[in-house]
View 1 (cartoon, helix red, strand yellow):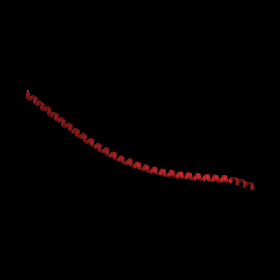
View 2 (spheres, one colour; view 1 turned 30 degrees about the vertical axis):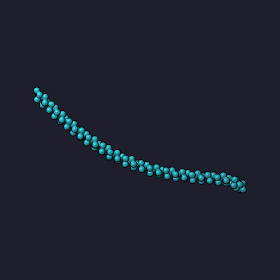
View 3 (cartoon, one colour; view 1 turned 135 degrees about the vertical axis):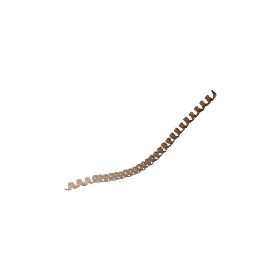
View 4 (cartoon, helix red, strand yellow; view 1 turned 90 degrees about the vertical axis):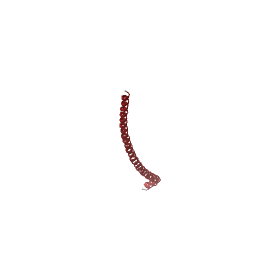
Amino acid sequence: MLEILTELAKLSPIIALLIVGLIYFYRKESAYKKELKEERETCDVRLDELNKELRDNEKQNLEMIGKLANALEKLSDSTQDISKELVDLKHCVELKLEELKNTKN
């Protein structure tokens, strides 16, 4: 029995060292996990902000596209009106030319 106690006494510094090492690495791992958790939360907040900004930009882009579509529609309408007026003007000019030709003959 004395021999077992003597052997355990010899092993106690090694066991103590192992326990201290385990505690050290456990604390280090806990600190690392805490840091990761904080970083993850920070990233989640940043992602939420970016998503909100993208949604806001998307709304602005959709509004701009709508305004552009309206402007193009108005331009198309005015172009059609102008082309009708040009056809009418061309027709009037042709009639006047015919009248002038007929009066000369």
